[in-house]
Image: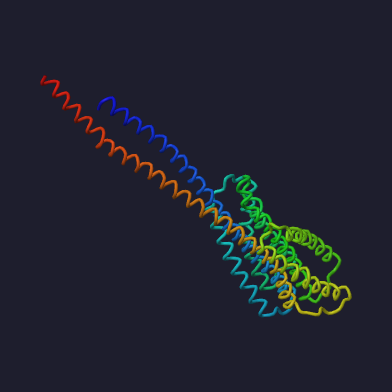
Length: 359
């Protein structure tokens, strides 16, 4: 190959190297973005399952308190308790399986201890459920075991799962908002359980219990104020604003009237105007409106992460295609130049050399 041909090939190689470098650089960025999106999706699914698990345990806690307080528990209440027991157990198994497979950026001692405490509490909870059905457990024991378990689930979601880096944290900002709705569900659920026990046992709400209920209510009121503040903000999604409307009507309106009547009956030492099963049904409707906020935020978060996932997949495919295109163009040009330029020039040179030799 002559000097001219060598220059052409070298030029092609330089162009290929630059193009390939840029394509590979973009491809690596796309791979990183795709891995990031996949991880965000894992986090989102894990958070969804943690919320579902905590909600099932909150419902189970309330029904268990009513059973403990009842002399002869309503068969419907017993059936509901068994239903939520199965639902909570199924959700717990899903979360445990996900935690085993989940690859965390930084697994510190605090996180490991938190997960270990939560997993260890499952055996205590399983035993407590059986004791509830046999009426061999006190209200304080039941509330302590279930509330500790629920708190661990919420802490895992709030502190351990939500990422700490700025970009990803911005993606998961809806989950920070969602945490407030879960606080309402938890602490209003504690009130539902304790008041349900008082109604089922036909006992007044004493000062110690009322003090506890007031402290729970303080947490609920603070979270409610948060949602009231964000509702009129123009950037608040319509779905979330609508869910807050329902919450304000059913929880801050109708439920407030209901609980005020229950507290009034207790203060006056009157018989409660409704039984424990009806109390659970009515209070659950109100608490469901807080779950509705959580679901609305979950849908918003789902759409954000799904858009990121789809966008990253498209970017990855485009950059793979770009790299293949660059290699294809180089191969085409190499063959074309080889056939149309290099081979004719080589042939011409050989002819000229043979002619020079004969001369």
